[in-house]
Image 1 (cartoon, one colour):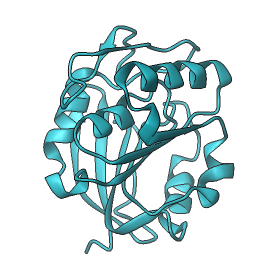
Image 2 (cartoon, helix red, strand yellow):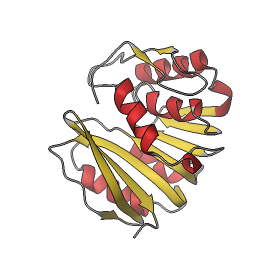
Image 3 (cartoon, helix red, strand yellow):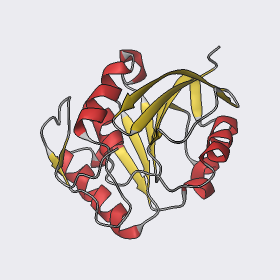
Image 4 (cartoon, one colour):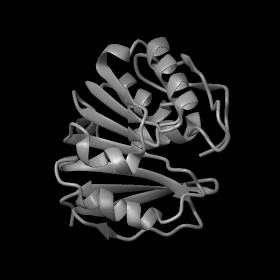
Length: 190
């Protein structure tokens, strides 16, 4: 989404709280505007007392936004140790440390071992990530990760096209925010 180091929670109980931004090169937190728009698109049942997963978490802004808006639990995966420490600090700042787990691990290696299922999976992978299509196929085929009727929200460059279907995930809609696209997939969709 856009490179911003002065970021705030856009809505919910932690609205307005400032988060630590990127501490490592290549991390670009999702903008407050884009986060607000994403959560305005999601139906309320996706967040209410749900388990949420934030992959390629960076600052944790997407998962923290979900917790602020009513999710019961959030798991975060960030492989860079320094960025992981900033993410943990953001969970402390917002008061969500007790209802979350932050893993310092490679997303591909840990994905099958995460304690799903999750009603909402959020990911904003690095723009230079190669084979996003293959990653989405792996995500869509990982059993027990996405809840029945759960949703996956993926942000990516508008220059990257993703398929209509990955395993059990079907594209429901997408939105454009500047140079970024956000695709909304649903498990078991048509």
